[in-house]
Length: 142
Image 1 (tube, rainbow, N blue to C red):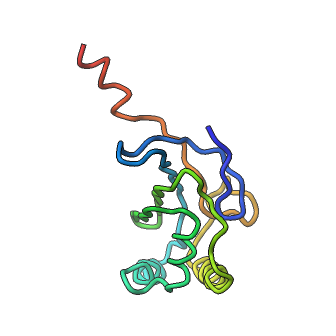
Image 2 (spheres, one colour):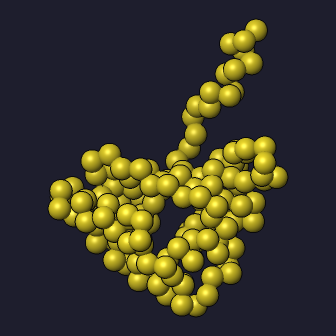
């Protein structure tokens, strides 16, 4: 386990190599709920369609060392998967990008509902990996 700050919070996360082409990268998974309102959920999903996320937000995410990010949705539950560089999180975003990201996060908070075990002000909670097929391949092939 490694201590990681995301965003402005400290978490312990599971680190796994994602592919052999990258010297070191991490996969980090988070969970969050949305307000259980169909219209708000549709708007939240629309705001995450290609071309809808503000350019400064994308710049801020990339500047932190995020190589890939996906958000998956089922009803009011969200699951975020981040593939991050070994030096994530970086502090290289411009002031404008950081400001855009802060405004985006404030706006997205109107759609989001913290999980019951979240600390005050905490939204996306890190998940713990409990299964990896690769960990079982050697045993099943013998």
